[in-house]
Length: 610
Image (cartoon, rainbow, N blue to C red; front, side, top):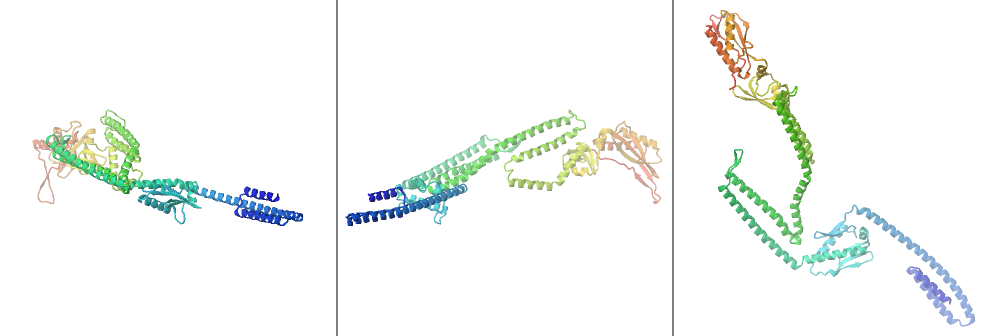
């Protein structure tokens, strides 16, 4: 009975405890020894004394077994505590690894396993001295090699489970291994990750097999030949159409083509117009051919998988610049609207200022203190400032204005202009000063140093004068501001211009008669005003003669040379008619002979312009 209870206790202990191999072995040895001793004791002791001794021995044995079972229970508790501690440490270690991997996942892109431009999955972890890049390249090479092999069976791809990793196999070849670190990077277990990657690899191998079969290669070759034939036919058609177009242009030249005329100016005659059209059609033909090859060449390269990547590169080389240009144009449309609005606003402001300027210039609109001849230059200055302001506003919206190259060119141009425009700026400022000082205006008869003539053009930088000899003299405005300027027309318009000439006469001729003759000659001259009356000034008393100066008023400064010429003629006629010779004798004590000095005449201007 005691033996049965002992057996039951040991079995319950073994079933209730997840003991290790050592504990199970110890319990087995105890049961075996107890059974042997029990059988031995039962066979040797048949008497009552033997029974009493047996019961005593059994009691001792039971106490011994109880102590051993207690020791085993303590060992099992220690073992359980150690296992729990190891489990906790493994959990903490795994949690730390997961936390570290989660922090690295955001900054680690991973290495993709790429097979013929197709990304299958990514590898993050290294293994056995091989980096993630090496593992990805090895897997790609192995998949490509298996896919290009002739003997391929999809069911040959399977998983081989090892203790610490799982291999994805093809036959006896290892395609790649899935480790615990790979599973941690993908937040799963190695078995689940291997089962996820295996069908992807198997599908890619099947696809490679299908693409590299004999019939597929034959189809691609036939398609390649067909595309070549179509290219040839289309090229023949393009050349035929452009030859026909050239014949049509020649026919138009003979029958219907007319010269290109712009406002009575023959820009192109029929010969050059025909040549220009032929050159244009030739250029258009080249454009069409280039566009045709751009489309068909990538198609040819995309037929075979080996050159498909090259076809995509060629296509991207062509289409990316076009897309970039189209995208830039579309993105620039809002800026274009802003530029158009600014330009239209400035344009209509300038039109309004032009209208006001014309009204002031024609003296329909009068502003106190603002002269009519200021209207045009003031309008030009304001228009220049408005356009400069418009350019400053438009500049940020110009394409490429933010690039360093554009800004560098702008700075360089500004530097060149500033260094080379010092004289230009000085002339411009001088023109501004001349405009508002009003020393003369267009059409005035003026004198600048030794240059005498009419002002035919006045710009912000230079002034042009036409002399009485029809010579056009260009004078910088900065020179005019530093020179003496005489405006004959302004004096004539305001209070009359005095012309004068001088003659000498001997004392034998009465001065009153000389005065009267000179005044009569002046009044007889066309262009001389009767009021105020001409007058004579005696400017010098010499030993043998007197100097007389006739002064007369005129209103038209442009006719001053002609009026002066007529005055000199009338003086000669009047003095000859009065019997007075225009010679005065001079006596020199230092000479033995007498010399006669002709009449001296000073003319303040030259002949009128032709």
